[in-house]
Structures are given as structure tokens and as C-alpha cells.
Amino acid sequence: MRIELLYYPECPSHERALELLHEALAQEGVEAEIAVIRIETQQQAEQYRFIGSPTIRIDGREVQPQPHLPYRLTCRAFQHEDGRLSPLPSLETLRAALRHPSTEGGEDDGDRTLGV
Image 1 (cartoon, rainbow, N blue to C red):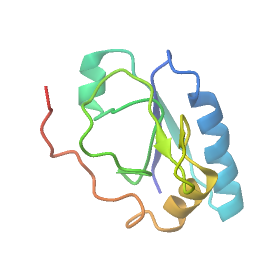
Image 2 (image 1 turned 90 degrees about the horizontal axis):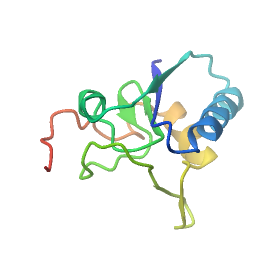
Image 3 (image 1 turned 45 degrees about the horizontal axis):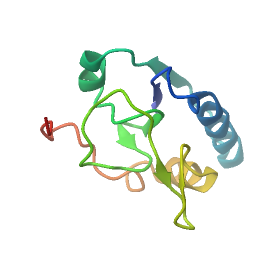
Image 4 (image 1 turned 45 degrees about the vertical axis):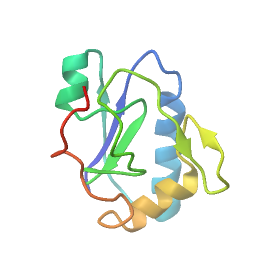
């Protein structure tokens, strides 16, 4: 299993996202390394298909896909199960993505074009 946490340093939520990810891994009994990738330029945002910080991918799939957002240096919002928005994915979203990495994360959006 390949796990990536991509972040923009101007957004403060990436450290807590990493903690949540470790918590989800422990609760699911999954051992995996997490590649932590710092995104600092627009060129990197486009190269890594980065739609905001934090972006978490499991086996190349977003834990909560948002396919119509442009690649950019920004903070991200996640919708929780109760409908509220948060700068972090919920623990349950992460756990579900770990249980079903090929279905919960949606399709990889790497082929879409930029909406510039």
C-alpha cells in the first residue's frame, strides 16, 4: 500500500492530518509508510495534481475526491459524514479508504485537464 500526504506549508492542518492518518492506520491494523511531500510552487502543484493541503492518497487515489478543483497552492476543505466542512478528513473517511483503497478513494483524476 502506497500512502502519500501532500501539503502546502502555509496551511496549518497538515501536521494534524498526519496524526489522524497514523491513528487510522493503527485502528485498521495496517502497517505502511507515509510519503510526506511538501508542495511549494505552482509547478509542483500541477506535477503532483495537488488541489489543496492536505491531500491524502492511498495507492494513487484521493481519500475524498474533488475532481473539478484546479491544481493550486491552497488550503483544502473536506466534507464530513454529518455534512460539515473541515480542514481535515474525518477519521472514518481515512479508515474507510484504508479498508477499501481501490473503491473508497474514487478514480485517479490524473488525466483531467487543468481548468485555467
